[in-house]
Image (cartoon, rainbow, N blue to C red; front, top):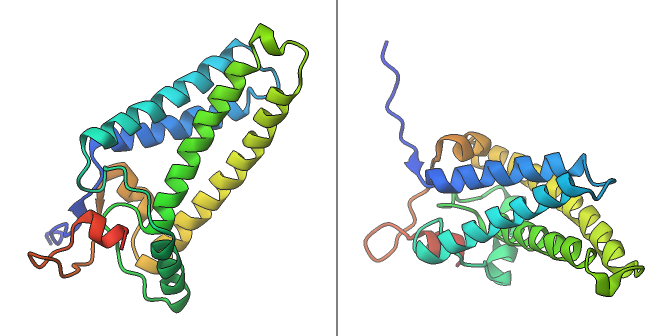
Length: 193
């Protein structure tokens, strides 16, 4: 018996998926080195910041589609949250508004962590604790955001009735058609209305 054809749409390119999993691995591995503050911790942190920087550049080059850089509006986030609680969630091309907001939050935290880690090494701040204190606070905020991100992926997978982790592995998801100019909505229209 033949398998039914895969009706899922390719939404995540190989560079997006590699960047996602590289960043996830670097952040998780670096959490194990966070007490030492040594070279390994620093270099992993800088590598994570480099992955984010490359992703931002990729998003600027590929402005259209799910890979583009479009922060969601607060109204889109509120509307998506209401839809989640009513059980009427549309399958977005790319990230839904809350997922997009979390993506920007995670990227910002990784960049701020790299910056505060770098600043804490400056001779100018030798003996000052504030860069390290800020770095530690940002680490806790990042950990909370990671847990929230994972819970959001689980909730969205259940509500949308699709495996979003698999989508970040093979790049394909089920996407609801939303009428647009040509009968289909663009990623920006679906994700950021």
